[in-house]
Length: 403
Image 1 (cartoon, rainbow, N blue to C red):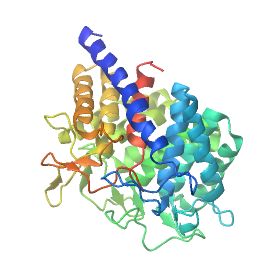
Image 2: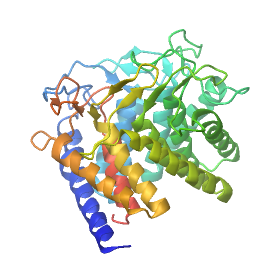
Image 3: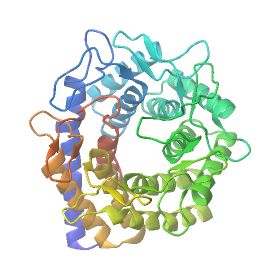
Image 4: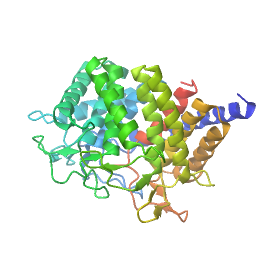
């Protein structure tokens, strides 16, 4: 390792610790904790105004539970465990459907179920968070809840004939007509986004619950990525599919490409299969290279391109930058090619100089293509959670051995 690489690593470690402990996590503890109605507020808008009456989303609350459980696991700071425990107590009390199983999509601000559908994406994030909380705190009830959700996905969402997991169900686990995760998505039976986060969740559950059948399912889902989802020529992810894995979109999502590159490798490592690790290692570097088509001279990564229309969204979204940093470090660790580490350093500098809100805490939703800060979208809310940016910081600290 060269001296300049050592300098970059030291700078990344110092900046990651500072960003996490001084800017991101204090915001969620101090600004987002709902002391009156319990849990966490559902929204702080882009102008830093709290909306106490906003709905409380499943994805937001699961990601808060994961973030603070993981932060305590790595850093050992007591207030992080206190916040994780608070998150656990709230979701355990209010988010689970005790009659039909699974978690609600959302609650109103008074913790009453609002949207009762069973979106598989949300079930997956709860498995992910509950598994990490068990690993961190030894909470057996959290692990039990995670296994219950896993069993429900295997019963209702798993496509036993063609592989992968279907998108969405009613409260009673009947498949819905409208399967979309959000209004911007296509209404298809299978999406890369949901299957990627089922993979991520099952990988974490495999650490918390070493079960042979679970590992077989994890291996099967990983093969779906390698054989169905990743384009064999471009190495971009194909994003929307029918139930037979026919691609229904020509969208390229640079953030998902580079996020999947390191998550797939993490799964292969958990499976402890040397040949599979080698195969995924080779493919994941090609996926990072494909994602770098969206990397800009200023160190940022743009959002997406629709190859069918030629339209490119050049906004710099918060989560894409976070995943770019991790994916680039991952590629450097696999190849030793210095340019990956240098790009990771440049991307972190872009985050520090443009996305991080030094006055009010956390990060902005995005920087627009013309360089303006986007204050129209939330600072925290249904989709704007502490997961991507906290995870980036924690991955840096873990990968470079600084705890």
